[in-house]
Image: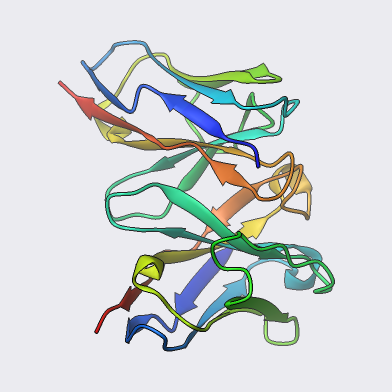
Length: 107
Length: 125
């Protein structure tokens, strides 16, 4: 099974900060990586697919990069509504696996 | 607008059974694979199972293999998760999700683009 390691697991930042979350795969997954945002009490929402493609309707302050085993999600200017937990997911092979999550709080 | 509505959650004793349903609308249901994902309290997301459009491919997580069965009825635009021999550790919010980002139809090599609001399963005596 492919393991995904996200870091950090917790992140505290101020409004306007640039924030980066990393996701490392235990083996190469090409660009078969997605990023989701889950706000408290809500369903997950797709932000990025194919490692770097922004899902329709998602603000352009979100961006993704990487391929192979190293990936990152960047929020260029953190907003109050970005309070959430962020997950990466690999869809290269079954079982589909998620990273452990990164909880983002606003200072 | 694509919508997914889960139902069937509740309280069940260890060893018991429950069937979850997910009613879909707003897309051609039979074209797309579907998945179930769960999140236990205080933990992260965990993929449970997927099913392709014609039901001939149904991969499962090892933690539920042999106990859970995913199925679909394309005439009713509904995907199901039959859960048997339930354990305490199956307690979670269960989400169904449509597979196929960017115009695709599969889960593998694509992803989960729309999620339902979830239904809560509690396994406890």
